Image (cartoon, rainbow, N blue to C red; front, side, top):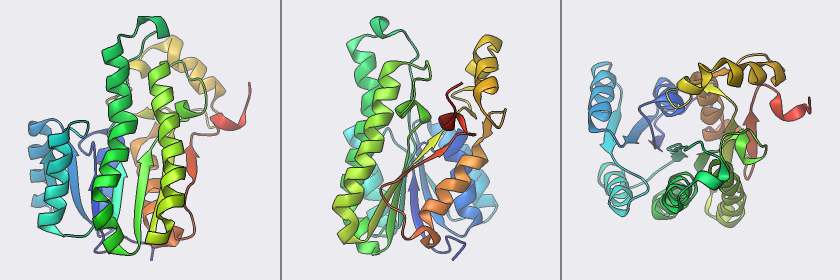
Length: 252
């Protein structure tokens, strides 16, 4: 059971950072994967690399915040498998600004991609997840959903909403054999954070207040996502697992 052999999985935002690491982890554990991203070039290059290695991995260009992107994912699942065991809602964005500096469009964009898109994709893929009988959804949230991390209010708001969405769907869909959990990362070495991690005055306080004294690697997040997707975690649902080096347990 410490594997994902023959499991069918969709992973959004799958060509970079935590999403890419999750694709690689799932494939190493025997899963078949449809991964999505907005960049056609990124999708083609990654898909080619994986298929040359003999993996059952299929890339799809999709913006999960748009109806057409959502429909493309549903169509691909229906055509390729007509069932779905695992959905990883990983795609996300951030715009770091002071609260008064955001435009309405920027606020809407962050919330649409980080919170609304996972909800709509989960709803749209629900028939295929139910058909599995033992399906799991893993939402990639953030420590910023429960703590102020100086990363922008809309981001924190969207991730907090995603955690609550996780709890609600876990309760509602348990009867359908669908488990729903969230994984909340702390600072992780990814393309989304690399610029920030290079700013000494930002990263030094992070390292100082993180008990493990370092930022995470994307693979460390992927490991937890894989566990939550496995049948080994079959009695875990509605939970938000903080993978944060201990930052959430200390006040100083």
